[in-house]
Image (cartoon, rainbow, N blue to C red; front, side, top):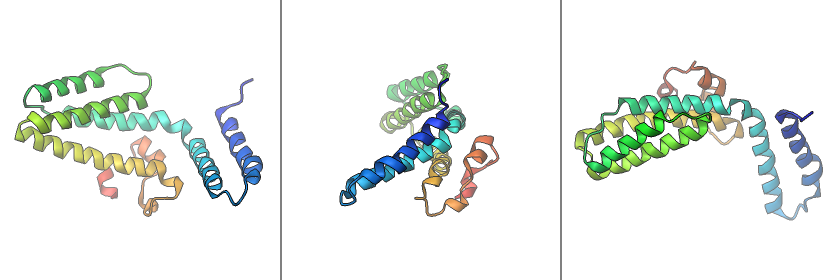
Length: 175
């Protein structure tokens, strides 16, 4: 029987804490720091791995909604980038994280293209929609990494489960 991901992650964490960290020379501050960082990342993976695809799907759905509101207008670069974004969104994917990354790159390409030959009205619409999306995404990303302990305002962030379930209807209001 193959050990579950939970068991394997717990085993790696335990191995780092009980075997590897004690074997590190305390005067080697870089090795101590990197071992602690590794344990922290493994702990986050242990907490996140079951939620990676649902979280990515929420992010992807919001990006697609943002893109669907756009009315691209401009020269050939803007029009070409708009077609590329539509193609990325229409592509079937079994991995929402990869599709999200592909669509985000296509949206970024549209922003860059519109800066070159988009109409002023489209540039304004694009800026408004992308900034609103980005504000929501920043809150989601901060919530995703809140358990790392680096966010100074983590108590005011939604939980990952709230983000995934849609319980947070307007993420802009949580900032």
